[in-house]
Length: 227
Image (cartoon, rainbow, N blue to C red; front, side, top):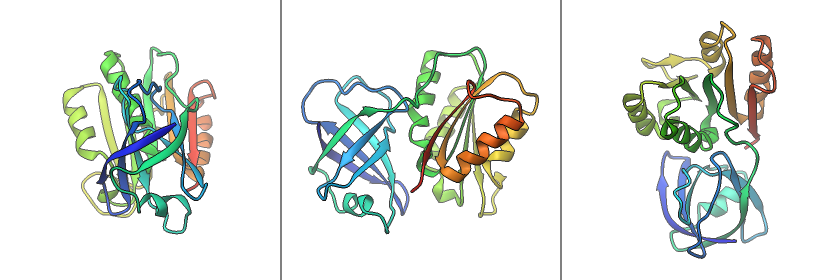
């Protein structure tokens, strides 16, 4: 398939939001959490989570961090609105499973928040009467992608809790790493569903810690990336 870049927003100094539309007017139908695989001009292929809710149209958004040493993102950083990209998708099974009568925890670092944005939107729009936690790890406040949006959701939906955690910057919020937060929240071992997305090392540690809390693979789901 082919998509045209309709807009690009610099979310942070190293992260850009790419807004795309497919090459025809048919609906681009995807499930929150799925990804597309971009095929770049030099034949490099890279997969990126869809960061937007399925709007019932032919548009979607990608949230991508620059890797100066990589092959894909330096090429993407040269592109501009009006340029076209070939892609495959939607793909992937990292999606919301059958709604469960329990709390939800979404744990991420960096652009790992991308698939969670539409997932959480879908849960909130469905009116699910559960506590939903977004535990978002970063180094500094500038790394908190979609911060204003998540803060607005927290004001609008009493059951949604946005918990940013910073590892380097001294600030008024949580300091350290994401693991301590969900360990505190779910120390009682109550039934919950955990969705984790981020660096491989973070996901590996989360899997170990969730097992230690007594949770099993039917209760947690992972999407890893390595850069």
